[in-house]
Length: 409
Image (cartoon, rainbow, N blue to C red):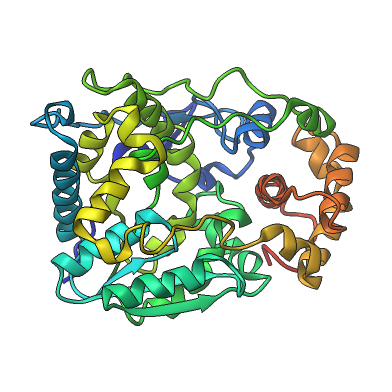
């Protein structure tokens, strides 16, 4: 029987209103609510509301409970480089063993994080397959095929249509409690295709932060926000708990990332999938996270220790043998530019001035941005995805007006 594990605290969502009513789904408060315009501005600036703000006035985002992480023993600083790589491999295999029960699938891209999980799964588990999705010309697809073949694993490859994110937008919006836009939806297109083959899916989500050196992201440029009638708040770090005392300076940045963008945005794309099949973010396994928070900048830089680990324990798919790739798995800018369905949706958004005004935005600025994206003059699909979240909420808060031709129908 497949086991479903609880999510770590940063990935949990709890909202509370002035009456003390608590729920994990912001949509539960939609009746009679109105936008918190400051939170809308946060969303456009950072990708998520900041601090205790939710998207709705009078509803707060409650801080989850403490995250119990134990200091790694021995501490990575007490080990040589080879020993650190070996310890990281053991922790990864242990995590895979905990979550991988039954017919196990690994969400495999051409990057280092997912191939490390796939290699550990093949090493540790009896039944493992890989699954990859992307545009027909996504750079990940051919590399993922090579990785799966070298690991001796079967592989499902799902090529995405231009409208993949649009087709699944409504389901992702519902599954994320009204927080996920189409930028987090393309992978959901594969749910019905993959559920027949796997009992559980292992994900390498957040590897760039957990054992990498990804810096905290800055906001959308202020000049762009001003045109939309929004502004960027000072810092996304409000409500972030104090890091463990044994975390290194590089680990503290990772900790802050895990409680901000990683917790409030990255997980959106998998919440809808978790309704269809158990999906586990392997790299969030507490012993593994603890070890990685204690790594210094040299081990994190360019994922140096991860690369060394692959060379020692999975040489056939190490970056020296199969170079890693990075790039958009689904080119949402191209989709919005080329798809007639996307054009219909963007045109509908262009004719909704009252809705943008209700969200505290400048309708003329929103319209200008939408035209530039629709006509292929600016690659701003990420920002449009955030506007789509606001657009989707506008129908919830004012259901008496007719809907558009796609998306939330």
